[in-house]
Image 1 (cartoon, one colour):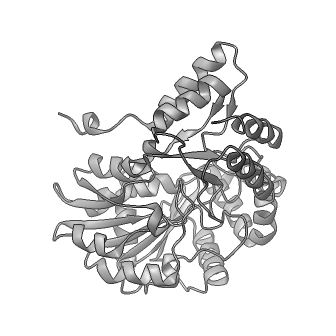
Image 2: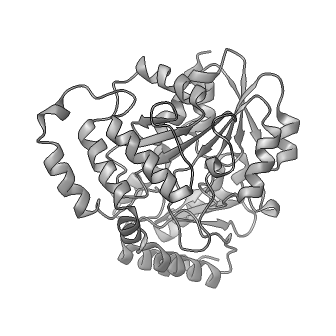
Length: 381
């Protein structure tokens, strides 16, 4: 059996197929499934790209590690945003989107038969990339009683001498749960020799409240084997641009860099120029991008509660995580919502076995479709 044969079907492919079938049958489908921002990339960033793409110097192969100016901009932003000083030469690496970096990390760390601890509710790339690297994904639990946060005691119990990587996602997709400094310290204390990694794609995405804590605000990246992945996709409505970065321990960053040198040729330098501008003007741009989500969330949450559906309380990400009513069969429930109400919502079990009994709603649909979707969801019983 090949490693490809071990991979489960990709969740969103099946959802998209069911949606397209409903549309082909003439249904007016409200798609609240995929987390892809509906708003355009801010105009200021488009203007930067218009100039950058005409710079002939950017048409050549980029620096694989990321341009010096991009890495310095990341260092400056990280110091300003999180109060953490990083070495642009050894602790920062440009990525072709954070998904790419996360998927390549197991290749940098694992030998055949090593294992990676992954959440039992999470981004499918975590276990899939482990399998493709010849490793064994071992799941740890995320449960409502602990606010969908990792239990350090369970992490310690499931780790052994061949545990090379512990994958965390804070703020978490799909639940929106976020770790505070104490939670990060507890995880660092049980990570032993394994690399502790945070998928931080949603660190800047939320509805107000306390600012989520970066792993690097707690860890000492000069000593601790840590890495954190950051993305421009959700923060700046740049999902199609494919740009992100990793920060962390120089040995871990260096290992990932070596893998990437043998696989890709780096991120388009013109896009790095746009990313530099985004980081320099992040407060204004992030406020603009995030402004649509609080009202959308309030609309959906009110509809679900009116229908008697429990909603998990969170101030992070742009998702709503809700409990399936009745017998808790998420797949059957989401199929019924599509068939009877023409609304696409995502079964929590698609993110792993821990998501059984829950479903996710994305707030990345136009306001009018959010309102229409909410009206239909109110009729759920």
